[in-house]
Length: 183
Image (tube, rainbow, N blue to C red; front, side):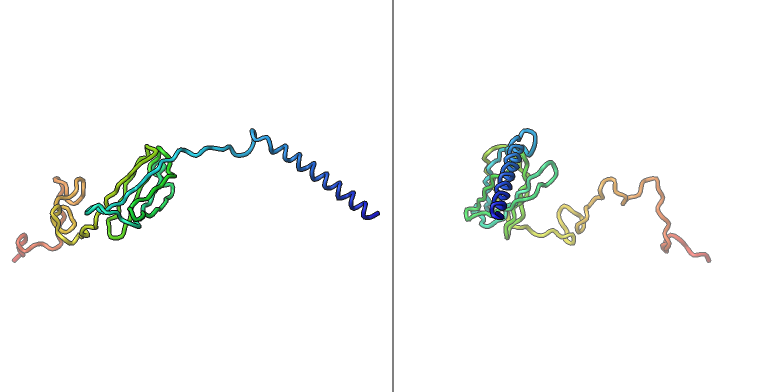
């Protein structure tokens, strides 16, 4: 008798569970008023970047090519790829119509950076990397400057020259030629 009561109770609970789950399933089938709407991703462009040595045109292997997708002036993150033995890397996840700031870093070469507008589905970009030049020092004389790293002429609007109608400040140590001591 206890077995039959337990059996009847189990069947009753199973039936109740099925009824509740089918009711809940019917409520969720109406997608017009709730939930996320599917939005297709924007079309993307395929960009092939080739990194070459400027001197001889040979490919640079294992150069880091860093893509910074830009939204106005805001950086939307970055993606870094390495070049293969042919000096090439390919990226195909950047949306058409956007702007990407590309940076290239290779050992023994100057760092390269530039902005590119993605306006076609397939783009090919070739970059020629230069060897680093001499480091600029403010302690050396350069052709375009008069002394060290300072410009020959002061910048326009700087306060280094007094206005024409002002008087020079008084000196605390008078020069021996300008004043004669009283006798």
